[in-house]
Image (cartoon, rainbow over all chains, first blue to last red; front, side, top):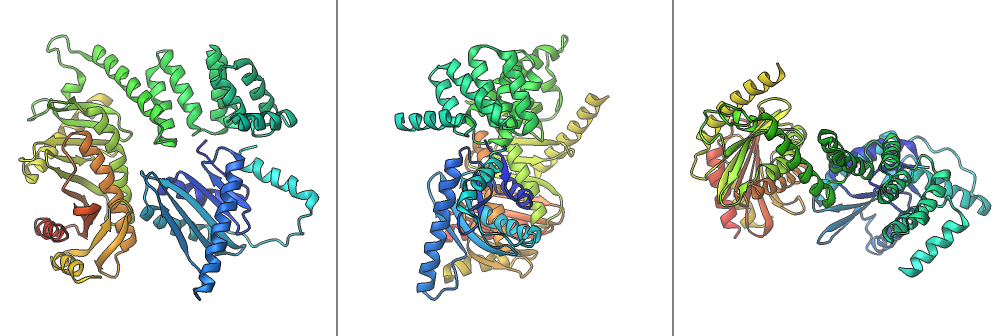
Length: 156
Length: 270
Length: 116
């Protein structure tokens, strides 16, 4: 499946546009806690969850390194492989900090992903609604919420 | 792999609507256990009737079972849910090709390629269908008097018209002309396919860098020069010449070929 | 920017009508060195020129013309020229529609040679 799905509707159009322009193969929009807002290209829920958890962990650990170096933050992280590259970056919105994890192939490039990520960021910041106050998620509700999110991400 | 398969079985047995039914059904299909695969797919679809991937899976199982009519129906449902679904477009492309409807087969495969540009199976299928389309067109359009095909008539009278000029549409489909390179022979198909991507890139580059509408691209290589220009909004003209042909002459040739192409296109629309 | 890179780019930007010249990592589409007018978005030029060059190279290889040593996109209000240099580097020039492409080409080929 190479479609774009979103739990939060306002993320869908900017992410679709980003995918079309950058030629990225996989993308995740998530919170620093690893909660996924939208995804493109993943076929299995387990892959989304793993990628989100790993992406959030990478940002968290590089954030700690930045603190040790008295850097305010690292803006983006790029890993270039032979066939694929990974781009991971964070940005601020009205709903707090969001992270984007992007995987691209040789038909795209780091430059294209970075270029169109700037547009994605601006469009998401503009589209982001003000956060509603949320009740804390109870353990009993957690699985239900998780399943509902996965359902949205895979077209239920 | 056995553990993974076992885990999928357990998950789906516990909850038939779990999305693990997709990899499990595919695994069973590949193993040839079609009845079991169909049961898993139907069980999953009962819980996820709007899941395009589920309909795609079931259609592939039905195709393996030889029930092409039911598979056709499933893929059409998948496309209703997700019009860009590459699997459903690929599947319908295959069924249309099998049924002899080459135009529709091309349409579906091109949609599949747009959604999954690196899928080599789609690229190979597209080549096969395009070859079949070209053969069919050649058969239909052979002029009984001169023996010339429609492909040869676009640039008649221009130097190198039968080997170094090509007219394609925006999606990389050949409209007329031909590119022949010794000793390889006819390279029109791959050039048309790749140029569609290059010209989309030219259009985007011009737009984003605020250069205005793009007019032409020239590439100079060690064994030849290529000149690409859009004679109309919906077509591309490609001129391929030996590297000794100067750029200015290439531009003049392109101007004349562009005029010929526009006239030919007008005649086709009458 | 090293002196070698600056000299290579300066000789290009001296040509009338040129808005900027860059050295770009071809595979990544990222800037290695740049000499640009203020209004030019270097990151966009680098990413888009590298992508265009990659796609045009595939087309030219498909028609057996070989990997291109010169690429020129002409648009109504501007011009983009790309010359591959050694080690996957691209020399990229952007300018107005009436830029002297002959002279720019000469300087870009020299710059590419100087980078060898």
